[in-house]
Each structure stands twice: as C-alpha cells, then as structure tokens.
Length: 427
Image (tube, rainbow, N blue to C red; front, side, top):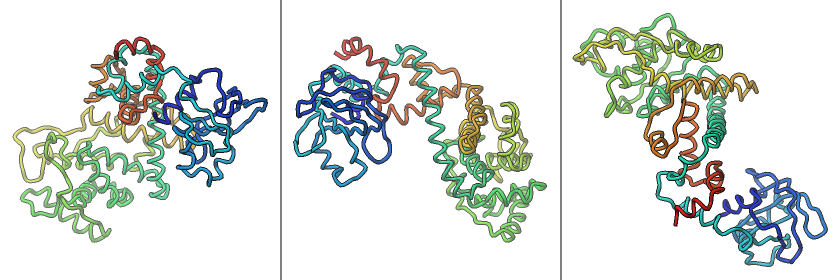
C-alpha cells in the first residue's frame, strides 16, 4: 500500500459512503479539500462533519497511523489544524486527532488494477491498453502535460535569468547555444556560452571573422598550428581578442565527434551560430517581436564561411562539396527547445498571456517529432499530429510513466473506469 493510492481514493471519493472514525463517530465528507504540495498536511480547506460537528481544516494521509510520529508531525505547527487523519491501518491509538481507517472501506479491485499497472513490464504501465482510450481524453491530458512541461521549464529559466542579472539576451543565448549541441555536445556548448558572454560578441557584430575567431578560439579549436589559411587567420585574430577581453579557453577534448553525422560536428555548429549571431545581434528581441513562424525560421537562415563547403573539421578536405545550412530538423529542434520555452517564460514572467499562447502555437505549427519514445507510443496505438503533442507525450513519459505516477494520470483514470475489462485482460 502506498500513500499515493490513498490520495487517489480520497480525491475521487472512492471510499464507502458509511464512514466512521476509530472512535465510532459518523463521518460525512462535504469537501475533500485541495492537495497541498507545500509544507503541512496533505489536503487543505477540507470540510468534514464528524458526529454533530462541522469542521473546516486540513486532512493528513498515512499508510499507518504511527507514521504521524515517525514523520515527527507532533512537533510541527503546520499540522495543528488537522481535522481528520486518514490511514490504511490504525496501528496506534495515541493520536488525539479523529482517525479514519480505510483498509476495508473501498473496492479491492481498484487496488488490484493499480498494482497490475505499477508492476507491469510493459514499456509504460498502460502500454497494452492506451490505444483503446478515447482520443478526447488523451488530447485533453496532453494539453495539461504541455503546460506543466513549460511551467517546469520556467523554473529552470528563472534560475538562469537570476544568475544572469535579469539579462534576457544572455539567457536566451545560453539556451540557444545549449541546444545547438544536439544532445551530444549540449553541455559543452552551454559552457562555452558562459565563458564567452554574448555582450563580448556583440562588440564586433560588424566583423564576422572576429565572432568566428572568438567562438572557435574559446572552444579550444585554435590551439594547434594549422596549414589552411582560414584557421590560421582565425588563430591570429583570436590571440589579439583573447588578450583584449581576457577570454578563457576550453579543452578541445570536451567536444565529441564520435557517432555524429558530419553535418552535426561541433565545428559546423559553431560556424552556424557565429553567422546567426552576426545576422541577428540581440536575438531574443527578434524572437519576441516575430509575428509568425516564418519570421522565427528566417532567424536561422544563414550561409556559413565558404571554407566549410568542403570541410567538416579544420585542415581536412571532404570528398564532396556541400553548403552546410541548418536543416529543418535542426531548426525545429532549436525552436522546440530554445525559442518556445523562452517565449513562454517571458509571458509567464511578465504575466502576458499572448506570449505564452504564441509559444504554444509555434509547437502546433511544427511536425511531430520522431524518436524511439514517440515510435513506442505509435506502436501502442497513439498517434500525434504536431510537436505540441509530442513534447507533451515526452514530458508525460519522463515524469509520469517512468515514475509510475499512474494515479495522477487522466489516462489511467479513464482506464480504471473500465476496471472490468482491465481485470479480465490481466487475469
């Protein structure tokens, strides 16, 4: 038995109607209250009639009554207004608060179904059932998951913005750089954005060579002698700029090339971000002012130095000559992971719903993502129409499915309503 299951019974009023305290007084629940995720009892603002008295206050839930003492609630003033202690098993009578023992006061099939889910060996607990859930239920739950995902991102961005002294442009630059790493080099790109601040780069927006030299130099790619003219020129310029601005240099071994397709090599990505910075300057201002997705995509439409037409790394000519622009998949990924969260956060920070709505509308305009998790959902009978839904599904998988938080999931509640069908399939 877990407390989460008792929360589920309590919130959904799945306990028997005829309830009594362990002292024999009748209980009538007028309001179960609101779940409390801060310090104090599990539910606040509950309204419960015990005997002839109507009480308003908090409800605390435990598996065993003795957990009250094990958690040391008797020493915590946040629990002074508890009007009812709901427990699966009352194993002590030392508590002076009215106690409700529930171990024989609910349909046992609810617990059996729940246990079959959380102990399932499927890739997600409801993997074999989810395809039969009504589309409206899934879509409405994904809507909530997307908002929860973006609100989680707000917490992260809040910390980053504060560390950057409320500098929105630097914060967006760091976020943008991180997701230029395409997962493998995310941490390295983010670190580079911290040792080479945007304000330093902006001092030389009129000179693309300076921007490129600082990015490649601070990344550690210019520490070696080069045979080619272009990297040699970058190195000479960087030596001057390093001295001028006191720039730090990363160890080149921080960068990973193994198992990356050459167009995703960090050298190519650095060349691309250099030209994006030269083109856009204070880029977050342009993100905020953009009227539609076309304007957002145009921010990333750049041509890099011609040297890279036949190179993927310095001093090594590639066999074929190719213009190395950012592809649609890469731009979509950057919009999903950098543009959308920052725009949503800006609306959250300034209480401007229009920015939050615009951020979510951008996700609706992007194609559904394709990765192993999304493919698993498809195999289970769930399809997605756009990046709004795939981002929500990925969040749900990471924070609900993998953590077996079935009792908090609307999809599970829909499935548990068909408990007979589930029981038959599980038997």
